[in-house]
Image 1 (tube, rainbow, N blue to C red):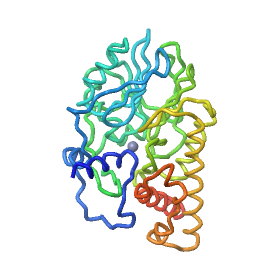
Image 2 (tube, rainbow, N blue to C red):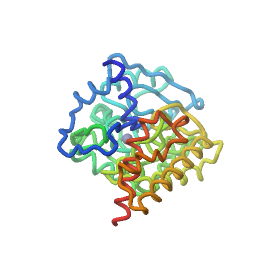
Image 3 (cartoon, rainbow, N blue to C red):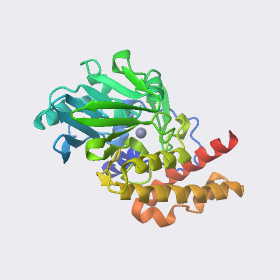
Image 4 (cartoon, protein in one colour):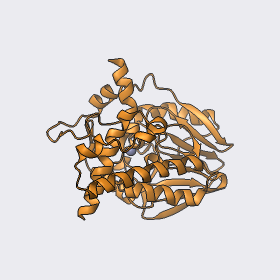
Length: 322
Ligand SMILES: [Zn+2]
């Protein structure tokens, strides 16, 4: 059982999702956080924070949930994403060990719980919370997150855990001697994604628009889509170039060249699925044709492609109908 749980842990992250690519689950009850944690084997007591130095004043924190980027310097502490409230004491300890104090700003790359739930601890403690306006709106209400293999009920955040600052297309922080650009390049993983570029180091945190653990999850039910994923990634790659430092929502820190390979994969799979849709094929037929087959070695496992293909198909069908 433990193995299943560990395998599933990667799932929300990578949306290795759907063994049940075409499965009907309209009547499935959404899980609450306790049930989801249980299913995914997330353990806040066991979970530790490890850190990676990108530059003297820029670090990546890995733990339970999405990766955190942390700018720590004379002006204070600005982080991108904040995992879960249970992890915040460990995050704060890691930041102290890196020479920082309390968190002045958190920028949420999007509203999903594994990237923004830490707001529940940071907001009441006085941290300014920043997110795209669509993510701010999502955090103000309860949402059913369709992860394909399961559904999750993300409860509305109380006012003090919601963004105090939101933006539309882009905004800039002048902080710790850096120019920190927060960019929304259209709907992608969700309808409210933000990428954060630290110009001094040409490093970007892409949230779940770029998942470096396998095939990505696309939250098509809340406005995400494959065309938007490709466009968003291309916009950011144009900004940072092949040598840019790329911090993914999950997985290891990498570079612009890896982002290019990811864009190539997304584009190829999108084109293959679109062609089959144009030929009138349904989801089960498209999935059975294995449109990701030659990518499974690099982005697999193959089971992880099922939820991905499901969301590619679903978002293309939606966008065709519009
Ligand atoms: Zn997400």
